Image (tube, rainbow, N blue to C red; front, side, top):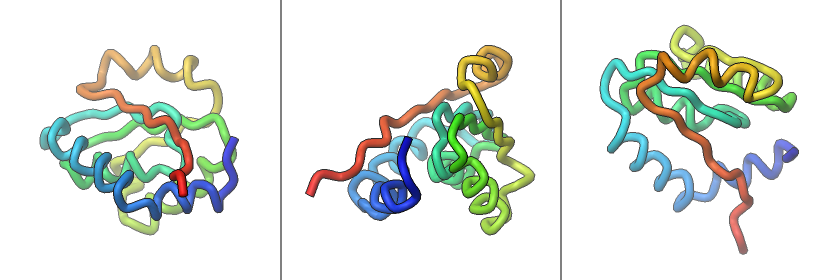
Length: 112
């Protein structure tokens, strides 16, 4: 997977992050339930909450999920984001039926 510096570079890419933010704001309605597949450090989950999601299920197989939990806590969103570690497919089927929106980003570093 990616290291923390690579995730940081993707988050710092304002064009990329703002595009995801605009897309989430356009599609996520207040009170929505969102499934974030391959959540990485949880930035999309935070943006979904900011867009109005009442609950986000964030699934990530890599150890970066520990950082994602801390970022959510630091932003006061631990009560709205549930993190699941491990195989994405194992968690996805149990959550998809309860979700209004599903999201996944291909976490490719910005080209420079």
